[in-house]
Amino acid sequence: MRMIAKFNKYVTNPVQRLWAPWLPYMAVIEHTGRKSGRPYRTPVMAFVDAKSVWVVLNYGTHSDWVRNIQAVGSAGMTHRGRHYRLTNPRIIPATDQKARFVASLAPVSTAES
Figure (spheres, rainbow, N blue to C red):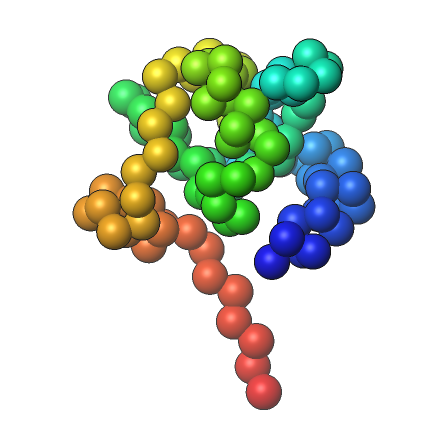
């Protein structure tokens, strides 16, 4: 799984950053490197409602962008052309009922034989 994450970081993400801020279930998280201090923009799958933002952690809690946001306690995000300031990030286990609901909203791709 980490090999796929590394491939996406250097190959797929630069392309996805072009359209992710405009798509319904995508967003770009804007965060600062906890070691380098450099700004980063990471495309993610996100769900936004009136009160909260849910971001799917496809590669778990050890991804650099997740750890960067946890270290600072905030991040920016662009979703459907609107900019948000995110504060008080929390990781909710996939076993939580709300997390299962959000996961059920994610588009599923199927390959036919």
